[in-house]
Length: 227
Image 1: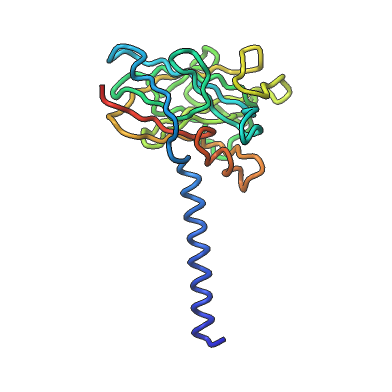
Image 2: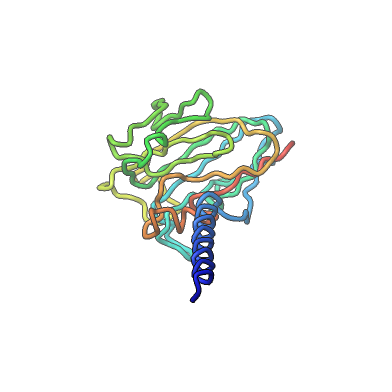
């Protein structure tokens, strides 16, 4: 092969490698295309706060990926739904409750232990207020709930790995769990992605594949609409 031919081959291989890296980053940062939507805009009068209740589980226990970690949401009728796209009214107070049923570990990036973007830049853990959590102590952090475009991030404190953990969703309060509560204001109408930023895709490169990059598991969307 001529020198020119070898150069073309090297450049082509380099471009393919760059493309694979770009695709990998895009998959990690974008949970997927919205599917079903759980509607909270019709659940209460316009302007009233919305109660949004979710749970995080160590294994969904059903479907195509029963061993994957996941989020679920309680719909306005009180039923747990495996869907992470939620319609919310614009410029409205959201009172969020997270039932955290998974275990935890020390964070790779301690910045994820900081509560930010919530009302008062704080949250409560089992009724006690906190603004930062040191994941090198206690049971660590299992997941985060983060909306990057709103600069919102809340660490979801883990349960002891020796506790009796829930193995199939929806989980119930007779299993070990933590309750994290916080509030935030929705912005104007638009589509806002949210994501867990704790790499918890067991068996995938650096933990960032599988449930981390699949809609209805560790990421979703807030579809904010004007009322």
